Amino acid sequence: MAKHQDMDRRDFLNDLTRGTAVAGAGLLVASSAYARKSTIPTDPHLPTTGTLLNPDDTIGIGIIGVGGMGSGHLGDLLSREKNGQNIQVRAISDVYTRRQKNALKRVEQQTGRTIEAYFDYTQLLERDDIHAVVIATPDHWHALNAIHALQAGKDVYCQKPITHTIEEAYDLRETVYKTGRVFQCGAQRCSDDFFWQARDFIQQGGIGKLLWVQADYSRNSKGGPDDRGGEWNYHIDADATNNPDAGDAYIDWRQWLGPAKRRDFSPPRFFQFRKFWDYSGGIATDLLYHYIAPLTIALGTTTPERVSANGGIWIQKDDREVPDTFMMNLDYPQDFSMTLTSSMANAQANPLMIRGHRATIRHHESGGMHVSAEKQFEDWFKKEHGANEIIVDLQPRDDHMTNWLKCIKTREKCHLDIDTACDALVVTRLGIESYRQDKILFWDHEEQRQTRKHPRPHRDSKYPVQES
Image: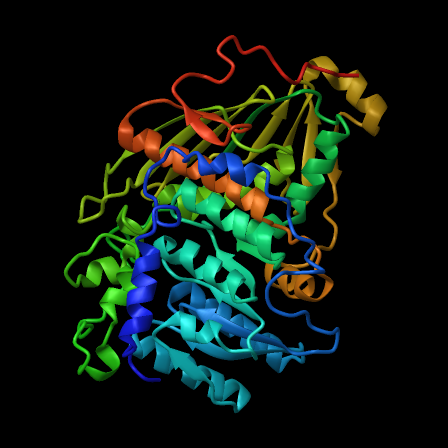
């Protein structure tokens, strides 16, 4: 568990993080996006990097980042190993000495094995006994972590959002295409069968023409007995420092900053990174992504054409930069709208609803999908489905991590594949930039770039209404 001493390696990494493609901070996608559109995905059964495992081989896993989410993934994977799944966590990487030691202790206690920990994740990626990695670092590191892992021949599970910028998302997608490695984005609701049942029902014309969708992810994290003083105000270790001689309290701050703006050591920025634009998109990427991604699946869509966002820091007025209340309105090229709402200061969320011209989809308290007809179409709905409202039972579906682990062996597409994850990232970043710039933004999915005007200024639909 040596400290990061290899300056040649560090200088090389820093050169990469300063690259204009991977670390580009702008919203407009550069002309290279046109070339990316023609990249043909490599057959995952014939990847261009790494090797393939046999059905009986043990999957060697590395975890990059063992803080909050990473620690949770570590516990999950260790439980799976203990229960007989053919996997092993063989190394971890983190910039905080205390987190490294805690992770190593957990592995030894639960498996009896001792593993290696690294400050520099690229050393983990050099190991041939690691076939796949779980990435749970702050958002601003996701692109480089994932791209380097794919290039090193590893299959990847990357926490949402897949990247911090749109440009990075397209770079990552291109790397997945070129390498043929298996990729899963960690937004677990995409393995909720509700959204797949909704997808089938909508595609079969069960609600008529899709019209308007609403979703909400809200909670109240200020006030009361569990007061955190505001969302993402995670505990700060009082002794944490960037002093290399501080033992367990040492944080490799330069490594943690990576492609982000150079700043003096800041415990709030390290422990509470989701409050700051340099490392996170706040509500949009941490919470609303959990609906944007599965709804992209359910609605069979890609990215919106028109995006507007509003909100503000209305209650949690501390050192945060991101809003505590945030809303987005989206218009899609298939002629339907979506409204996404969220507050970190009031937990009374708007219910998920998918409204069609003839019927509406909701969650049912039983856990199934509730579909009810519009009054004007009750006769039609009853003829089609036997009643004015129905409950569609959900079917067994692998959880998100199980899906990824299976796909490593089968080489099939994961529930939240790179294309869907990339489209969801575009949505969140457009919303963030609309909020920060105080303007409506327009996006052309075919050209994969922002436009100054609506790509269909007269709204002539490419998808004419076709209802039976």
